[in-house]
Length: 356
Image (cartoon, rainbow, N blue to C red; front, side, top):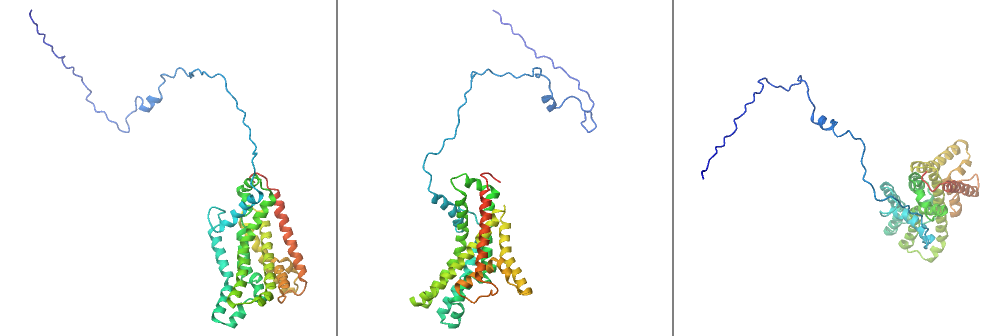
């Protein structure tokens, strides 16, 4: 058998003549054809059928489930626990986080006023330490100094107590109306009376730490540093109680006026400025009228002067209001507090369980 070798030859190369002219892509060159994006998105192929095909579903029927709110049939917390939550939220916020976020300037001012209110305590201890009778006669516990500790005009009722009350009442109720927090309160088993009372007690309690607590420290520092006996305590304790009552009236009046202003506002600026304007503005107006016309009747419109007049009567210091009886000042205080509480209660009772 004869093998035949076949010779495989490669195909001859094909020459392609390209144009010899230069192809330039400058700005004046004409645009021909389609770009990539135009070719991709502008193609009309495959768009002849403009209907979608939906796969048949096996579920031909649906179900509607009944959804209802189930009432709570358990035991609610007692009333005092709900009220304690509101009180703790405001008072504990002064000392630690996790409660009402009082501003840092407010906290610092409260600390400064508390320390400044202890000035007579420090001077009493100093007079006992160095044995100075002159210093003790000026700053020791007596009728006039007890009155001055709570109802003295300058600096306590100019720079200390009214500004403290203004900072506290500024947003206690007005911010609840602004941010809709009242809806959160009233949607719970909290009635409006408890709401107002806990707000009122919270503000009054913080003021009492400055006004009444420092008064107690002042009185007991005298007993300890000077070694006072029971005879001295029996003689001066009625004066201490009278000053305590005067300080309580001051706290009640400032709190009532401040919360009444807070209930008609939606910000913290107006209640604070309004309280300071009422306390100091009426005092200034009464002084001007008294100096020009020798009439003291406008002092009945001043909360501070009414407090001072009643305090002078119950403590027994020298009166500075001679044209009318202190009972008129007491009646004016009752009217101021009654009007402020009426405004407060009417505004809170009209608050809805929705954001205003």
